[in-house]
Length: 408
Image (cartoon, rainbow, N blue to C red; front, side):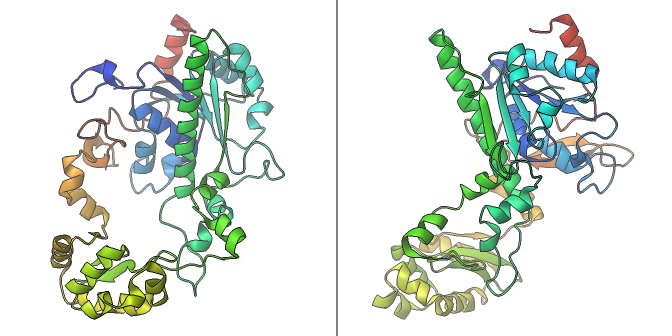
């Protein structure tokens, strides 16, 4: 189930083959980091609570016993059930840590220390272990002890204030984007620390545990994506506002309705692109207007431009709109549903929808499409080796490995 393969069937060509990861995380953030490492060949052992497991197993569960969300986030991993509060569970975790390269966790700060599993204890059993800690606000600072999910981080990191229409309350994007961004940073931090460790080994040196402990805060991960939000405020006194489907200071760039009740996104905000777009929609007068030659002028007249573009798109079905825009060299794309993504030839060509049999609560497994592995190595996605496992599916297997050779 967990044999490493790629398109050539050569298990040695996965770049993280041989890297061992111990995942103590729940929900989305740390498990996303684990998924990224597992996707490229790391052996990720996911530790879950007995009986209940990761709560993600029940999120958006429409049938069966394990959600597709869990199957997706925890693909290519092995599941072990251990009670970290018990002496037996703690000893097993320490034994696993002793043979691991990376440990991932996203408990509230202080939880590992309460269980006597903090970085200093882990360092004692494995002086080369990289410890990646994900929390709402980080391991230090006045808010460090507070609990918090991605929704809170997205609000405090500045994202929520910019999403939605200006005359309504801020809204959330449709996924736990704060968790996913933090997971990306956690995986990057793990790889950065492993790279430093290898460089130290080559110099016959040792990296101190403080430098092998990666501290990822959800709020800071979100804030890091906010571009020049704060510099613009401090330099110019600018307070960014919600702009719906637009981007502050950039025009025309928005979603526009088509004749067949679908929509497209058109990004006509480049100076040269703008002229071609206006010619295409029969408004060469706007393309030639000197006041609209740069983004500042176009942003000031964004409503007029959106009305003109929307009037043109509303006369044509989506496919025709996209064909004409492509011929004119104007960046544009359809606003896809899940069904559109599944049918799209570009996603198919790069194996970005991969079908695997999975229990969905019926009499027999069903072939279900799952997102492919990003980034692509070569021409198309690496294959998904296995979906998120059943609870405790690999407990006996992993513990047998420990008994055979605890530090192998």
